[in-house]
Length: 549
Image 1 (tube, rainbow, N blue to C red):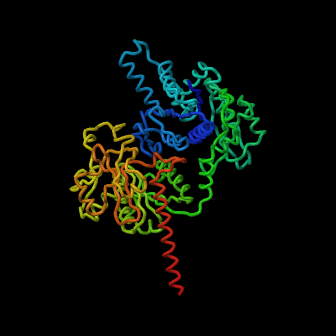
Image 2 (image 1 turned 180 degrees about the vertical axis):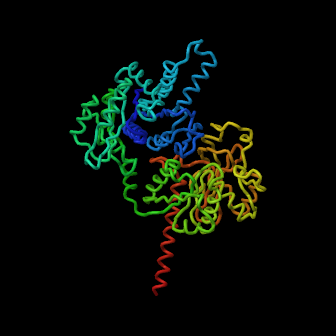
Image 3 (image 1 turned 135 degrees about the vertical axis):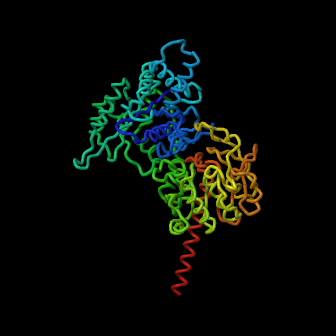
């Protein structure tokens, strides 16, 4: 059996439990331990697959096709190991399992209750990864905040596990807020005290308190928190705001969070932390030698978490290129033929983001046309790739009113169409093409040069596909399908000939980019944007010299 760490939160949401959990996991991993993280979400949706991105941010997809919470993306980016269906569990999934068992008569006529039936299922799921024998430590993040009605069964399950397991096999890390009152010029500990008291009233006693703060905590303040929250002073950890989430593991290392955890869990003989690659990444990230401006064309830009993995993939790719990637959000709904040049002229590259539905698609198509005609580096992901296909069909192939049947069921030229197996689907949850699929890349293509391989595997989340009835028309005109699924021939990659960098992919490469393995598509896209920026600067300089002369 593995040892278990539970991470809870108090005072307010969005404090960064996922980042703290991932940072602790990274430190333990750097000492040679095998670690995994799982997230328990209190909402009743079975998974976030049917949630609007405005509600819950992006839906992260794993290799095995699980639609999960975006925190799993942080886990993978920090640990550089894949997660799975087992790493994300919701209240909806718990209740669905228990109700199915009740319908099958598994409870032998007993009254099914929150305790013990719901909590037993929660505990079973919590222990599942630890029973595999693959991990030394399993970190479990409990979503929401202490005191939420939705979180009560999860907190109760943790209480029971604390009681059932040996003390050295289980511990609780509680993340809380120390607000700063500007008027009083003082940090206040009372919200943290109340949060810990509320957790203790539920029978769960934290072993470590991590304090999110905008200002450093004095030793006196830490002692005060320790006294009123019943922990040792060295178990009060300062989590001060960082310029990037990737600095948090090093800040937690300075605070000794990993050492406290190792001592509590009685893990001996561990190695010194090996964080050479992590520090090298941060050095490149913090000291860039150049800068590029990338336009992110989307329709959920008001909420940054909607494109979280894309933004983080740019961070990784920028560090590799020692380049600061400045993202400019452009709402596709407000792009028109009249203003597209004004909105996009100062960009060095254009990424058209994924999405669903008809809102904003015409703006995306106009943006693609601008990038194609102005030789601007272009990268389309999922819907972004489909918009590139539609734009090319309309403006190069002359197929007026070409469209996707997702937006226009009566289009005379359905260049993007619903997959055959999707046509009879009525339920929306978990019914798309999900998870990792293989792709064979054409030798000598741009994609081949980027991947340095002809066989790859990438993660998918979509229903509509490139319509292979038009494949010859596109190929002959210059938009080449350079990557296909080897089993069914579905087009996975399109690229434009006679363009410095124009590529669209049906899958989601951002989901596989990590600190240690930045995704090659993003790395090469940033390289292309750097070159485009240099050419623009060179042309501008030459023009100024000519005018001066």
